[in-house]
Amino acid sequence: MFHILTMIKLKKRPERMSFMNKNVIRSITAIAVLFCLLWLIGLGWAVGEYYAGKPEKVPEAKTVSKKVENKKGLTIVALGDSLTRGTGDETGKGYVGDLIDEIKDKTKRPVQLTNLGIIGQRSEQLRSQVQETEVGRQIQKADIVLVTIGGNDLFRGGQGLSDFKTDEIATIEKKYLDNLKFIFDQIRKYNSNANVFFIGLYNPFIELDQGKEMSKVVRQWNYDSAEVSAIYPKIVFVPTFDLFELRVNDYLYSDKFHPNSKGYRLIAERVASLLTW
Image 1: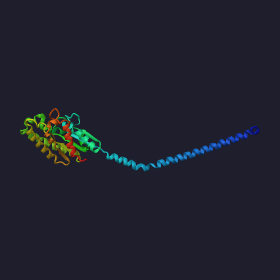
Image 2 (image 1 turned 180 degrees about the horizontal axis):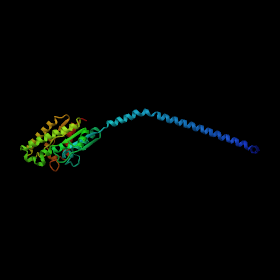
Image 3 (image 1 turned 60 degrees about the vertical axis):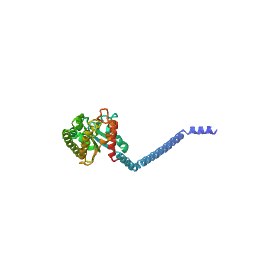
Image 4 (image 1 turned 120 degrees about the vertical axis):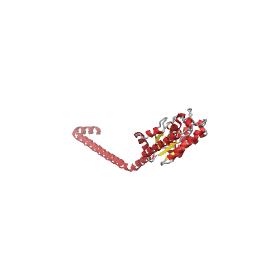
C-alpha cells in the first residue's frame, strides 16, 4: 500500500524528481573532480620529492668515474725484426704476445699493442722507420717500447759464420752502433718517459764447429750494445745469451735460427722480471 502511494506521489511530482537527480549528479561530479585534483597534487608532490633527491647521488657517480680512470690501460709499441714479429713461434705470439699475457695477468689492465716489427729488418732500416711520422706518433703514446735489432746485421743469414774473424765484423758493428744511437735518440725525442727494453742477442750456432768462436763475437756485440743503452735514461738492455747457451736446440725453431714457442717464452719471462708491477 505504501509503495503504491509512493508511486502515486512520484507521478504527481516528476519535475521535482528530475531536479533532485540533477543535484545528485552534480554532487558526485564535484566530489570526483575534487578527488582527481587531490590525486594530481599528491602525484606532483611525489615526483618533486623523487627528483629533489637526485643530487644526493652525484658523489656515487663520481666514484664510478674514478674507478674507470684507475683502469687505464697500457700502451706498448714493439719495434725491430723477425723476433718482434714472433717468427718461429707455433702459437703466433712471439715474446711480445707472451709478455702482454703476463702483463694482463699481473696488472689486470687492458693492453694496447702496436707491433711495427719487420721480418729481416736491419739497424739501418729501423733507423729509417723511426723517422716516419706515424711511427713517431705511436712511440709518443707508448708506456713501454720493446726493441729487437742487430741479429740480421751480425749474422746476415749465416754469412757471419764464415767471416767472423775478419775486420769486416768490426766495420759492421760500428755502423750498427751508430744506427742504434740514432734509434734511441729518436725514441727519446718522441717520448722521454716510456720504459724501453732492448733485447740482446743469443747465439743460435753455438753447437756448430765455429759456435764457440761465434759466441765470443756475440758476447762482445751484446756488451757494446748494453753500453750504448746505458747512456740513455730508462732504456734497459735485456740479456738473452745465457737463456739459450746450454740447451739452444731445445729452444730453436726448425730453421735453427729463430726461437720456438719455448724460446720466446724464456725471453718474455726475462723482460717481465724487469718490469715493476
